[in-house]
Length: 250
Ligand code: UDP
Image: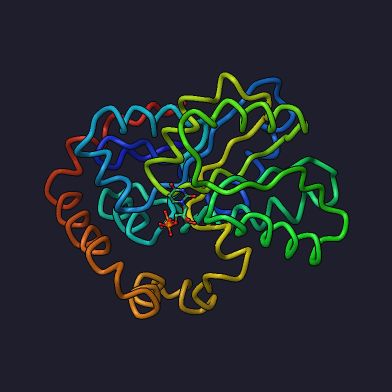
């Protein structure tokens, strides 16, 4: 059985939400820092055009399919990913579990105030959760060392790095060796959702694979970014097979 599918050079794990959560939980027990990225069609398309970014994505310990476009791509390649595995959904499952186990979570990203509001909302919902830090994602390069010191000092086990792609993946890649946390997850706009600033599409819309349409209606200025989806589909259709054989399955 193969564990990954190579989509235009990006080796995506064929896992659903529960399996991804279990894998991350195991990472928490291992004595090293792991990275988890959640690429969507737009991110894979960027990696297709940028080999260095592609290498950064493939350096992750887990790459989940954040977007129905990636799931469809795996089906086009006859090597299906079981379901969409969005970073936000995995984050929710993880939060559920760590609120019982006491693992320490750090929230990094979003506009000033967003991470703090997300922290407050999560603490209200999960009274026993241990959120040991929250700070915004609009910092200067020279502040990175302070942030790393803070994350290490408070003993975070998991860091949600929500700086948008490709900034979050590059930040994690460049700094993972300096961080003591066991898991660094790049999960885009998730803090905006936890803070209640952005509304997530209803479950039924997500299950129908129409979250992109919901977002387009709610955030029409994303139109240009969303053009990546049909472009991605066409490239997978015509060039996808060339990459398919090389997926580093173990
Ligand atoms: N962001 C950030 N620092 C930056 C640029 C972006 O913290 O320098 C945050 C932004 O505020 C937003 C998130 O990164 O919360 C990106 O959200 P988007 O919806 O674009 O991400 P997606 O989930 O689509 O990748």
